[in-house]
Image (cartoon, rainbow, N blue to C red; front, side):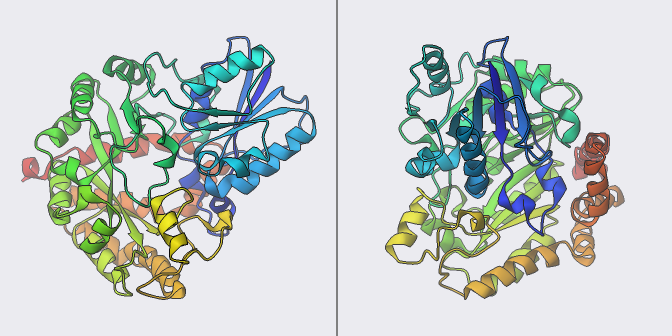
Length: 461
């Protein structure tokens, strides 16, 4: 059997504001995980449109096409699905958007998958072999026990800056109103992990030093996280991950992570307005001292990638300058900004519909860069303008220098300048590396910078 697995390009990845490096970071692990369930003699191709455009005229035709759909890749996903179905190929769709809007997706597929695929995908393959596949599979059993090793041999490693991405859990223990993933895990456990031994075995199979954990919340189960970090200690790995402010402040947990090689953490601060946190059920942030979080990470030698969302109901036109000012004053190395976006099947979307605040359902524009609802504290134009200004202001050279000046040592200031400046200011360099297929060659430089972040200021004085 010939199987083609496709990750269609997000609309924002093809826009005039396209930053190639942002979409050439990580390979499509979800598809490579599903590929591991296929028989060994299956002819499998994984195609990621973010790094290589799909040629729909290619022959011979596959027997099965598997497409992973996100909200801003929905239009492209349906276009691909319709093309292959029109030529008699069996097409299946899954992913966040399919789970959120199954009836919409079903019009473009022979079979759709709702929720995670660890239990439904093997059932589908058995049904397909018996020539009796169903039109819809809905996940109910949630476990990663017995998960086969990811088919990393199908991934074109040279096309990604961070080919050693890894996921050892599913979901998140928190339930924020704006989160797109709650609907994906409805009907079963919303957060679960691999066994520690399986996770360590997967890590051990990865070459090189650098890892990037793509888990929504690597620290979400403290017992699992501590056992994982204990097992990783001594491996000599350097890694990046995502966590929450309450996890950073938890006693001893951060220290274990740093001893295991943590050098950079993505943290969802989300908003500098406390009232917004309660309204969006971001309870893990309520009452937390953000400055203490940034200080604790930096004192441990961990770089901070801070995430913020603009446009919540308590935000006014001053929120952009206040947010950027706080981030720069606290030496945040990189920041990611978003316009609040009411994704379908979220509590935020339901509330916005009830209040008649949704402007449209053009999924191409649900990219967290455009306003798709009626804001309360400012106009839509003010919100979009402020979003872009926040990026410009945070990544100005003078802001990068101000952030670097908060570091205690000359080496620390240079590392800050190198990482923050390199991420945003050297776009021609990234473009050339991607076009020539040499982006992986930059990985040693990333490892060198991350290695430097492991030096604790308290030990340098």
